[in-house]
Image 1: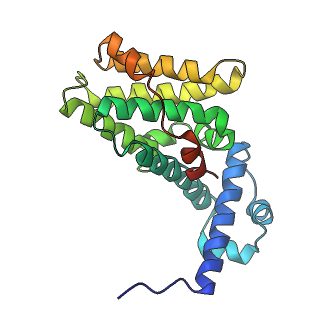
Image 2: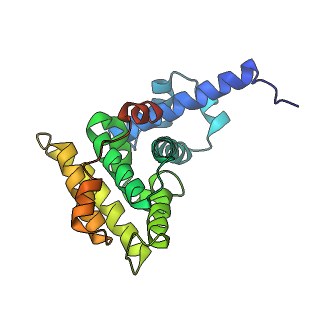
Length: 216
């Protein structure tokens, strides 16, 4: 039996929740995490009572907002790399696409950067996918890594620092910087220099599709 279509009430609740999450993402991107709940509900154009129908606290809303942004980004990367069989290429494509988002999608970038190290321990978005790709690279014999967790720290720390660099140096070529860092990471993980360079010169999937899927 097919699932019943969402009712009008369900659709209204979903719109309210989405509006609150979007407002929270905007506040996080602006560094306004000390804002009052009233400020968030006004930005979302919903009533205070509606807030408590969905979230018990501001912290819960902010967690949901970050998880939503991470999940959207991660799902977009999965979609664009699903037909790739080489884990080294999957890792490189994902890193190169993420690096380019800092300029193409600054609000999402700031949500990621302003949540800092929370990303590294999250079960959503980038972190579990980086771990997955590193493990796949090791199992396939593509990465020669003794400690996958240290490789994960290198990759996630580099990604966050790169994003901050691209914001503080707006004249820097984001594509060139991202591809160079990705190439360096591949070499660190055991890919020969010439192959790492070749992988990072390959055309990228349709970035606009990723931007659409990660809109916040």
